[in-house]
Length: 87
Image 1 (cartoon, rainbow, N blue to C red):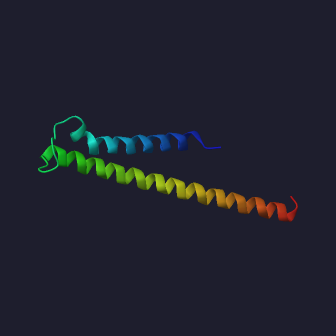
Image 2 (image 1 turned 180 degrees about the vertical axis):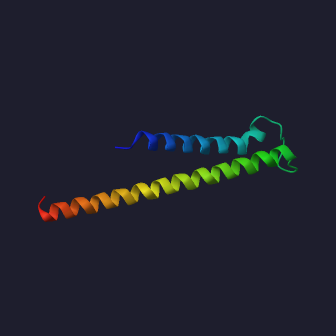
């Protein structure tokens, strides 16, 4: 079972990832940047901020997955040892 704090942290990370995607694409979706030829300063700022947010959130999600797999493997080893001892 996943603790409540972990669920909240995971939800926050997913929201940050989606917000980063929105920041990266917003200049083109709300039409204050018409084309890709010459990027205006607000567009560059949104893209850098969105890209950084996407990167941090993606790294956090990957680490969450890695630690979850590590914990699952450790629990499986513990159960296997308990079964081999007859407990």
